[in-house]
Length: 209
Ligand SMILES: C[S@@+](CC[C@H](N)C(=O)[O-])C[C@H]1O[C@@H](n2cnc3c(N)ncnc32)[C@H](O)[C@@H]1O
Image (cartoon, rainbow, N blue to C red; front, side, top):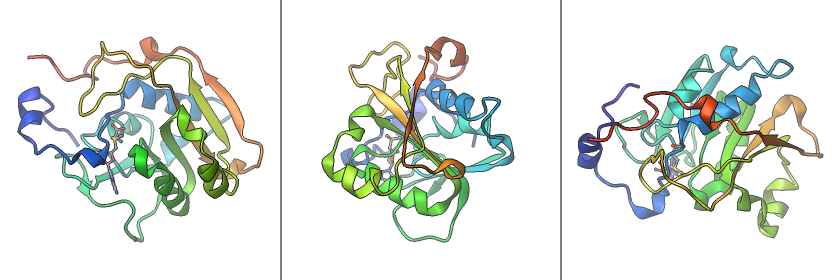
């Protein structure tokens, strides 16, 4: 999975089409999910495999690999990381957990597809506003309510096509988690207390030239 992430190399890659919604996830936000999943009374995800089906250049797949036994990575566009595959196309591929930050405009389709293909659980990082649609409520949340919603109390800065450790954002994000051992109609809400400082690592961001 290792790759050269310098600006020069990244700039040589073909830019994905605008509609791909390429917004890389700061790695600490993925660690926040994993830390929640491995909390003592929860799950042994180090015995499970994961699939990141919209992996882009691996900003989420890499931190997932710190916690899961193995991580498969794919994306519809070739970013030089993982396999090239459209997640919404039929496949027999399955995984214990499917974890991703889906393209915003395809969030519901990603949720429905992931719920069909995961054996133990699904976690999707979404804008908190994703919770607010009557159509989505009827089509997704009423039928398959997440077991847990993890709301970041810190902002998770995400920008088109790049990670920026100094950037700020007005957009709120949360993790939607479907634990199949806990499927229930009453979704549980949790705060993700401030954790960015603790979960950021040297090497998470591209080195400035
Ligand atoms: C919001 S970005 C997230 C990237 C990565 N998951 C992360 O968190 O850093 C959405 C990604 O979805 C990919 N994508 C869009 N449509 C897709 C599809 N049908 N199948 C697989 N990947 C898709 C885009 O190429 C883009 O990399």
